[in-house]
Length: 137
Image (tube, rainbow, N blue to C red):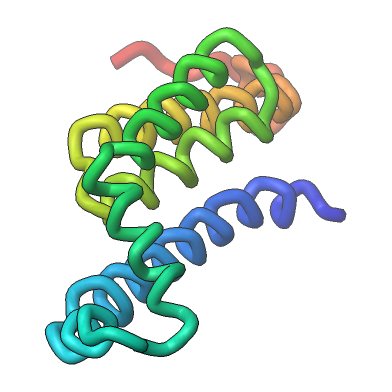
């Protein structure tokens, strides 16, 4: 895998997580027709899954999960922990757990940036490899 691809893939997958969470929120949880279909006795089989999703944000489960992984990402310097904190943060942010989701997204994104920056080769202080020092402003 090229270096550019390794840098872009985590951010692209975070966008996919945000799209999936938005699809759950705006396609399954919020539409009144879906709510009426599931509250009427004997709704489709996926209504139980919808009920679990609703109970997840009513009990702030998504927020607690995002905060837990964000604190893990603060102490464990691994790209997976950082990405997971950002992913759970964006999902919690979309699924009504604003405060915890925003914090976890910020911590995860900053930690992911730091991990990616540490993996890059160091940049020299000279321009164009010609050992020319940049002029002072």
